[in-house]
Length: 360
Image 1 (cartoon, rainbow, N blue to C red):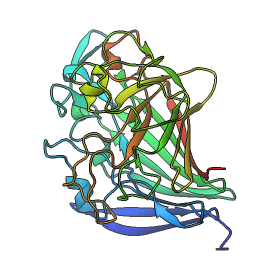
Image 2 (image 1 turned 180 degrees about the vertical axis):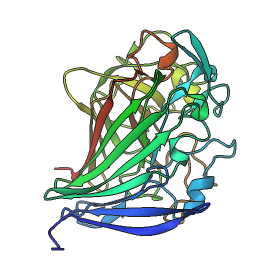
Image 3 (image 1 turned 45 degrees about the vertical axis):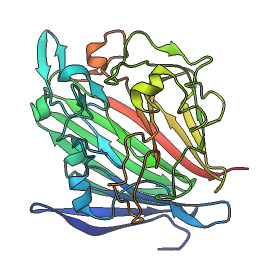
Image 4 (image 1 turned 135 degrees about the vertical axis):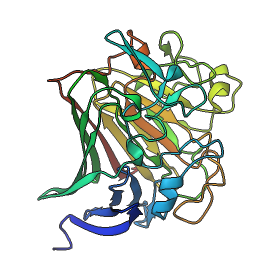
């Protein structure tokens, strides 16, 4: 294959039980290299050049499959580095919801709530994979059948998620799913970014823009309460670029609840643009577009030095940030939020695009 063509390769990364797990390497002439696992759909690394052309891995992760299988915080909460999240991204209050008059219970794995589909969510599954190539890019399509009752969720869900890297250094994540009975579904990717380089320190100096005039206040278990609130005159106003760390320790009750930022922003209508992050030191820029109504910005508040990343260096608070394009937390219990109900004959479809570039 020509050096100037997008490249795609596959290698064995390990085994889960008797099942082989592979790592897919996507690379383009623009200098971006993305490695994706068919275990959990994990974005294991993403190398991008800085303003001087020097590449660095800009996402948090682990170097071995065993670490991904076992990755938990001291309280046994999974950290979800780079993973596909399902069936339900974010939190469901009390691990219960009612659909068509029937109450469903899903596992509690985040205090009194269910988080990211529970302890055996989509991030713990080995997906079937198909390699994709065309003139403009390369990709891998992952597929999973989640049976009725999987982690307490109703209906058999057939999910398909495609990662594609193109010549313009855009990594697109396209989701498609169907169900054979009514259910709720909210899928996302949980990559943690550090544009200065994984393991290089914290991201508090990164400048962030969020295309959102409202956010969802939360209670002390991070479940939304009340109506979405204006970001005006608050530490949650990222409509213009602001350093992540500039206001993170202000005595604001919402920052105290989460130990920093871990909230859903309601994206403004009229444009798919969702967010932009800039690392002034390296010049790297991450731009995000999505078809989803919200983005959960998480500033890595609960990361701990017991987590050792691909660089061999420990992660501490703020070692990376996540921008999770999704529906709002606890939507199955909030009829006033955009619906996450998927019924037979309907198709769940959404797309999120991340582009790496260099600041002017």
